[in-house]
Length: 310
Image (cartoon, rainbow, N blue to C red; front, side, top):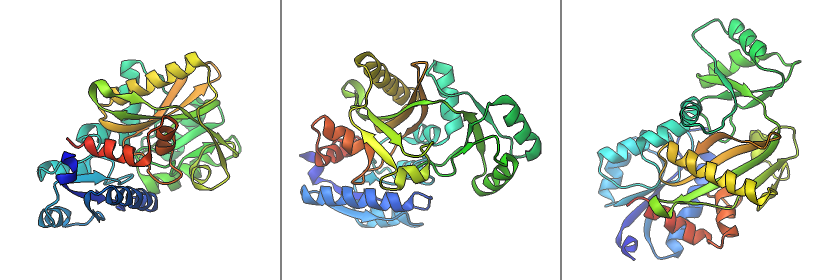
């Protein structure tokens, strides 16, 4: 295989709130590539990264970073300037997908269903912004940072909550934020792999949180979420959800791999929440489980993603 002649670096860790998940993803990818006989090293996100990659003779980077500075186009742009091929989506798609508001505006433009939303203007009076949100959205509604992954900072806001206080605290912590309608229904996620005519939507994973809402705690605390694979959807709805996943992937210009998160509402409309351009690759991550359902082993998945660098 030509890829086995390449010097590979798995880039992991980084500076975002998802650092610990990235390290687990990266270590598992590194172990897989090593076991399969690839010439592979690993690196954290360092200030002199490009100098070190060049010194080590790295010819391709497998990006296993999650969140800011790794999934948002920043590292992708740096690698472009250094003329080093890398896995996954390029600069524009990475930046668009990381910014949930930009993502939703693209979806609105091309007719992909997404929950109604309102941007919070952090430069305005936050008390007035809080009142505007409460006026425009029925309780409960959802509060989200614009550019965080792993459900960091996501809250389900109820009538009895002090939304103004929550807003002030989270604007200080995350910067740009927004609110969107809360849609009851079936939480699902769909991996997309491949490129061009070989683009493929994987089997749909259904997420059944034990809590009322699928937040960071529900996502990463063992036992708080039940995973159903394949999802309990009709054949026609399964086909519809997978097609919307492909449409969302293509609308943002994603490449090689993504994971599309949706909720199938009680009105039988699949609403897209967001697209993740570097899905987790840990032992309990969604993408590897979906691939395995289709008979694609973890090692095969890693190599398939690696091939997206070329």
